[in-house]
Amino acid sequence: MSHVETPWTRLPKQDYRAGTWVTSICRRPELFHWEVKVSFSLDLEIDDRISKDEVLDLLREMRFEISQEDTDGVRGNFPRSNIFAVAKWVSDPNEMAPRTEGADFAAKWKIGVRANFYYVMSNYDECSADMHEFLARLNEKYDAYFIFSFEKEKIYAVKDERGMRIVGQF
Image (cartoon, rainbow, N blue to C red; front, side):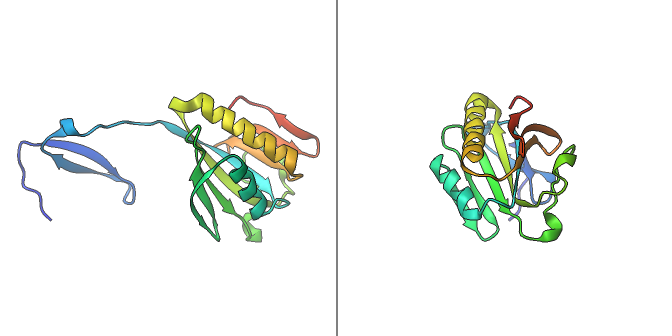
């Protein structure tokens, strides 16, 4: 399909597969509503004492809407906050070391689950409430240790042999 150059409006669009910007041509841009939703990722590493089924049960308890589930993990979102989450099951022994910076205390842990939670800034309060509830349930129901951080760089919460501690605001 080719495009003919006209005085129509050019609308930039990210081509995420190629990592480049492409241009779309639109005759009536007023028909399009462009909304930018800013989000950021918070990361959770849980040791291997929690099972895949236990993680799924915990997510379902919170009415997590699963959009994709396979042998590698699960994707979906929390309906109240619209947090999008991706959880991956870690089984390769070479991948089980914690990746969070500054988590030297967890050097001997074997990570069994890595999850990314994408907050939507316009729903920050709901996102925060959902994450606090999720971590509280994880802490109460399971013995597994975990590290919750901002992009694996700044630690916000930890559960280890001393219990769960919130060390940063999220």
